[in-house]
Length: 344
Image (cartoon, rainbow, N blue to C red; front, side, top):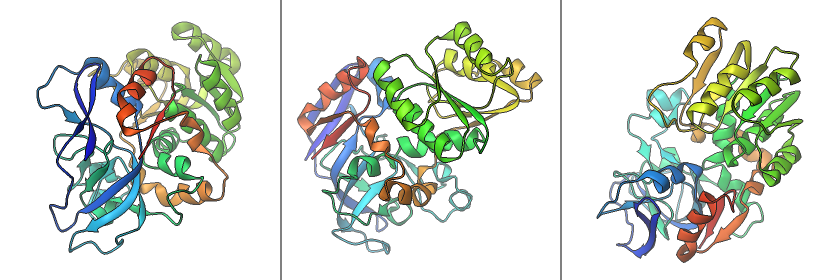
């Protein structure tokens, strides 16, 4: 089968690899119909040291079940399923608490343990606890939006939940990437009265406004902080969604939160320490978040997608075939594309 392998910074190849197959009785084999390139895939694309073995990429997918292990009970061959970026058993103490990314039998796709989903097929461990059967066909027009439930829509929602977004609140979203834009959708859906998007790309800002953003701050650093404060009578916002992971974005997030506010972090941190711990402490700002347990949110978000109340698939602005994936990485890295979908 064909699969995406990253060998080092800027070195992405599509190669013929051994076919995926069942290993454990709790596995499912999924033929991938749609996959994505994620913003988090760009970090190794920029920094990965050269490797002879490479890393199989991809952690977002929709596909058709081709085979199931003997212990799989909740799906069968032919079912269309969405695959969250982390696999989980659904029954451990953390899964029962809604924290599937901390599952004691879980892990992440596109790692040394489990191959990635930017491939013609993928093995899914803990299939019963991971995969969600979809009530549509694989040619349904909603496929792009359903695909976002594997990561970016659930991650944007997680940021909003961690930031305690709710009715009547003022929200700021730091980052105009796919996750940030889905964070705008999530904030609107949870009843935010005012949503400030911090971004500077006209096409992305326009999409943010379409999703419900009421204000735009295109400045960065101290200028962005000053601008947000001016928009909020000097107080800052109730809720901040930090969707980047860089030191500057994390600092900005804390500095624009009002006393007693909350920051939801979902941008993968690129530093070992978090800046602005003193302002966060003295202003009683809650800082929370992490890898989004998107499996916990699928049932909540799915009806809104199916009924057209939210359209997160609009963040997928370029489509490639499997052999065009390296160019998809280049396009996202050079900001030619917001988020690339791979069709098989």
